[in-house]
Length: 311
Image (cartoon, rainbow, N blue to C red; front, side, top):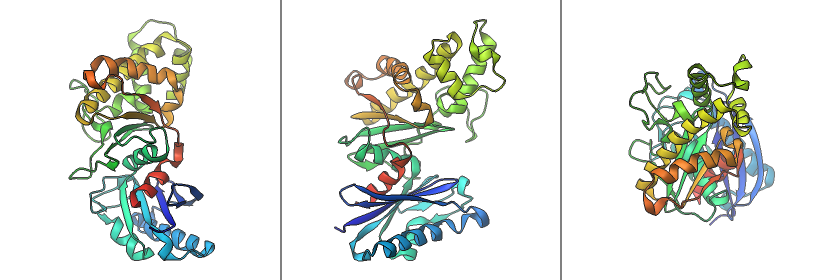
């Protein structure tokens, strides 16, 4: 095995890059801009240039580099091909083939949420766990499932798309994916705001949220921690949807650890308590004591997981 490897996390604005030793130590991290013009055709060449420049800067032989792992915001099949990545303006892209050609190094590619889950399972909140479910609560809801230490990719690269599991067959509003009733519509930051507005309209309770011109998820979560009645009612519904969904997934995969990440997870233990209450109520008896924990790697989860893919 080589001495080093690279972990790359491609985002819509920046690409996070990490140089790791193969024992999992982060040697250096840096960022480059994500150039999405011309259908994002410069993104992978820019990544390759950044990798090659770092190798030269540090005087590393390519023989000492185990490979490059890369996470991207879109479905990735087992061959490292992306059929489409809307946020990068990509159509079909052979990520692994292109990266190997541009760098001369072995490459692996995965969906960014799956890769982040692998990072948390390797060096984060679920370190030491070989079976993990991770849910990332941000603008949307991302997910990743790790079984026996490996990412569940699925036939179409859609394994772990937890945010688009249907949790309400009666929902009339559409999700960004085009379906209706997705978990993302309830448990994401935008979903929490949507739920809070519905609760305000249906409830006569006093609430600090009524005086706000522009409600944010942070405002709802802050009010929730202060026992604001509308915020509490909102988060009870969010907790039931998310806890109930995790209960179903746990019956399928029986995880050792469940990890909650993303900006919404900054609400901390009160959020976990709300999720866990419904998770325990709904899940199979053998899974009831599965710990639900807050992610610890933050924005670095993607580069850690990408590095782990090539090891």
